[in-house]
Image (cartoon, rainbow, N blue to C red; front, side):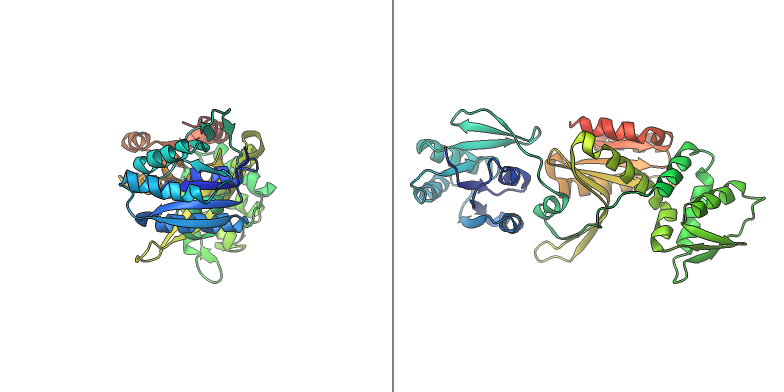
Length: 378
């Protein structure tokens, strides 16, 4: 059975239309997209990804996605253009009516049809009856986010976490209760240093705030700042970002890097900037602390060191939930990593939203929590 063309049904969930195309054993030379009027933007994103990989694209506009007879006729017209029978239907997308009508048209012509299992990342042959195929984990963060409507995606160059920063963050988490108040003060000092010279003044002395000064010395030893009397100067903007809570993001990113090979993480990045501009609407900017792809699914991690007032955790959770659904689709997953404890109501809300949590003293075993979360795909 030789297949050179895939017919896909474009829908709001684009990943099942991407993963078979990116698998070298299934990759077609051409993709024909059956597109309803409300899926034009999604089809534009898919077309750009296909073409960047040298795959030819043909677009067929579907006049009425709720007219089964019309859909069937249109699909039969497409099939007639492939007398060699080298076209297969990906029946995963579209409306149910589109999928059924297209399936019946292909079956009537004795042509192959497959379906991508959304949770198990597996291709199932509906006809002919062939063994299931575990799809190759090939999709990367940028393609994933672009497929879900990002107009631009800014991902920093891949880099590790240097030894002095790893040593610093490990020490902070091993003394999490002792440094809790001092870290809040350091966050504020880093915020105050948001000026061209990256400087600020430390009001309290070593006698009144010994933990703060011990903390500052740790950051100085890591090369992030210099202390001259009561004057504090950060080495550069990245160092100020690290002191202003970015250290937890870098620590979490470093732990994810440790797990990358063992758990088969396809792609990982931190400090990802996304721009989206839905048709006729204003530009929307989003930031992802840490994003990773495993088993062709997007995993988002939000890192927070700030101590929130009552009910403010809800805003963080709802924002994370919204971004997960928007950029990750039905199979997207999310985790909140917080330096501070979450109250009982916030923990219940996170559970309701299916957002994993690793907070406060649990951070001492962050690697274990991440590993469990990434292995358990449900």
